[in-house]
Image (tube, rainbow, N blue to C red; front, side):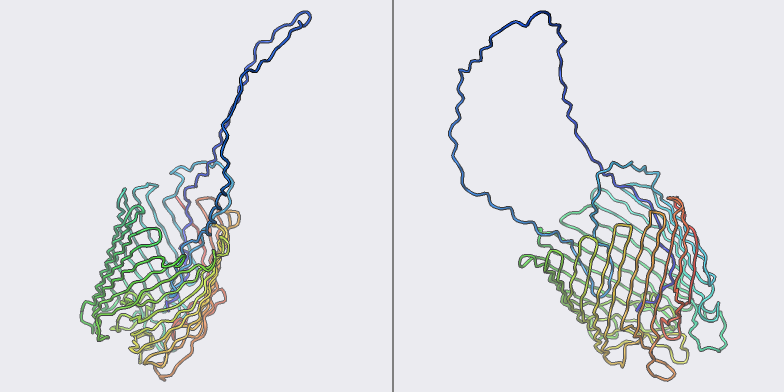
Length: 565
């Protein structure tokens, strides 16, 4: 379960170039010649006109053809390709094909497209907000820019400044392409701060001893096709270095290659390869490289009409000490079959080795104890089926059921003697996780959008009694509406329940209170370049726990302005 982050406005209203809808009309002019008017004088003379037709036109006899014209095959409904990952939901608005009258619009100059954006705000809990970026102006061959971000709260839900937190980042990026290749790169720095405020109430604690911070340096690049072709490829490389306030250090190098070859309209070959080397050091952990290499070839084809099938394997090599085997082999099958022009049945059978690092763990839980155990998770088997439906061109619906078998799956448990910090424990048995989900989305261009999803989880732990700090139900929803291009309203809801934790003092299971988080934002556009906004988070002021002893902030209000230039 990922840690709930503070709600800060990060969406930047930008103006994009308008699409020209041109309607051309051809006008044929008929010119009529007039002879000069003559004057008639006197009586009309009597004349005789004789029409003689001596020519006879004859046509050869034609052969009559009584063969019927064969009927034209009916075109199947256009099916947008749907790819769905049952393990995590990523909503994408359905393709919109609005009926637009052919109007001739004014061409927007490149000077009207804004390359810069600035957002400033301030809220309760002593919470300043700064976000800005600047990009190069329109150029079909290159793009470069920079982004700066800062969001913090000087006070938190427990003892004021003892639970403050914040995040700051600075990044540079660029992309260049020609007729054959596209090259992109980025470099950035990120700082995250928090406090270990999960201490027992009434216990005297010094603020300096509570503070924790993480500094992250990132560097990456990517090489790929610049245009669509039968042979597509993408090669990427990334480096990161993480350091906390104490003795934890971690460096990571990732190489990723993805390629696909289109044989014909119905078949293709895909190949994915990833290699990661992670080196971590702590006060009681010696630096030792952990490597993970995965290779996943697959073949996609149509064995029968309309049935799209992808078959392949995934091979993984790793050197974690928690498992006796270093080589793992998994199936990789996917199938899609249209039950109707608007409903697809999907299914999959797969597996893999999920990368786990100190960086990924602290992205979920910033209150880790020193020298925690870090091992990859073995997704032994992952299978499921579902339905994807398109109701017109504005509504999509998804439902499905999946079951996953996991080995070496981690949980967070409060540390004995210091419940403000968490250790990671790994279930070396086989944990079964079952997930049933239902999702519905609606999109009316940029005017109105809505998405809701419900997930229900069931866990069957392996060697442990429970699966700690993971919910059994979760509901997420968000909606937005744009009123006359002047007022933009948006709202989102997060609710979850069923989490359990292990109390280190009593060694008994504790049921955590459910979460209900309702948020609302309103923005008024004074002009195309200037707007003001108000954002309300956790409107019901429900201080639910995200982990044992760690409640969230109550009602939060933030107001500010945005400027595009």
